[in-house]
Image (cartoon, rainbow, N blue to C red; front, side):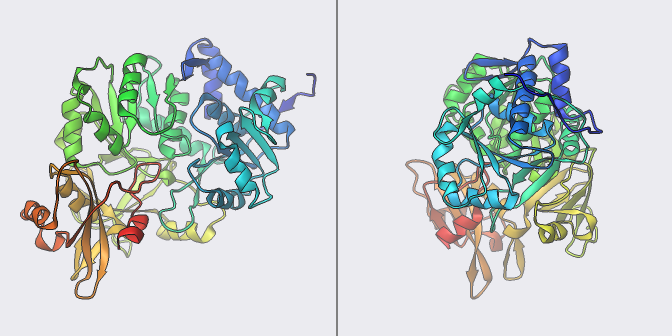
Amino acid sequence: MTSTPITAPEWTFRNHWMAQVAGHAQGTPDATALRHRGVDTTWSQLHENSLAAAGALARRGVQEGDRVLLLTLNHSEFVEAVLAINSLGAIAVPVNFRLAPDEVRYIVEDSGATVILADQLLAPLVGAVGQLTDRLRTLICFGEADGFTSYASLVAESDPVTLGDVPEDATALIIYTSGTTGHPKGAMLSHRNMQLQALTCIRANLMGDESDIAFLTAPFFHIAGLGSMVANLVLGIPTVIHPLGAFDPAEVVDAWEREGATLVFNVPQQWQAICALPDIKDRKLALRIISWGAAPASETLLRTMAETFPDAINVAVFGQTETSPITCVLSGDDSIRKLGSVGKPIPTIQYRVVDHEMNDVAQGEVGEIVYRGPTVTRGYWNKPEATEAAFHGGWFHSGDLVRQDDEGFVWVVDRLKDMIITGGENVYCAEVENALYAHPDVVEAAVIGRPDDQWGEIPVAVVVQREGSDLDLAGLTSFLDGRLARFKLPKRLVIVDQLPRNAGGKVLKMALRDEVV
């Protein structure tokens, strides 16, 4: 196919991840960049395919500043597509494929996107969204589906763009928060945000190098998955992309062993399932760095991880979508010495621990941790009021209540919105949950507040119990007595089969309150 060459916009910041991929393609063209379902993509293939995809998108009208939705599972083509979108100066908007049609419709209309790339499996969902909004005009499919243009055919027939520079503050991604309250908000993350986050990972001893093999299970629509992928691209680390689906711990460990994985990340719920495998300590694994984040982990689980993988460096990463995502890291000997802490703030971010009037609290006192710096979002897409509220006083308000010890380590106490006030006393749900996890028959636990005429609120424990056990409130209260102050003890116990969670593993407390309270 013959056509006029397309050149990407003239930009000013060359150290973006598209340029990094180009550098790897030149330096180690035949080395593996990605592996998915046993199929390798080399650095040269990744670079060439992404530029060809950029050319195809440009011919369909995608230009600088446009938003392009991605509704897909994890695979190599997703990575190509994000690189392609950003090569044009456009903005990639990954969408949770588990959302209902009306929830996707909201993101389509809020972002103003007219182009969507979707998996064949998800074409019916796109069709349902199309019944609710007429904004989507260009439908591209990874696979084949009626009414869609094939991504593979577009790439095969397209001429590549010429990679230009990129303004460091240009928005690269809009990632919609989990929406635990109301509609989700789209956090705008720039090329500079993500590039500096990747470089910060090196200083924090979180990442390896081209001799390592990263293994990704986190979904790419979540900052944990996409942030890890971007860091791997920048640093030239080959990445095994594990197919998404119901999490099977035995299958994941088999893949670690087969692929020789050295760098792995999982949410705490997944680590719990992995550590419970009967043969886990007998497996021949090459794990060098094991990391966790995206949701709180109990001290019981962290001890179990350290005992199960004694030769691996245990790394805790803490942060949120709006901070690209990492703000604090705990690793090495500190992961045992400071068990339960999320570590120290990363060097590229400024932080304070403040009260509700933005006064710094004393060391060891509880306050909200607030941030500013080059890895912090500049705000929420199309939400000026929410942005203004989040940046009250010129600092981004995380909503996390923490205390900091005399060595500078941060200890998360609770989410500000989850704190319970009972009889004038503050009860931090995370503290009660941590105590609950120490009970041998508690598999999962969440604590929520319930309105009470006498006390204002009372703590309610919602628990998934070990199979064959028979927990009751009296027994649980007896276990916790002496571990917690009396006013912190749950006044009600609810046994459930499972806790509602978002894609990042966080318990959806709003849904839990609706269900239980």
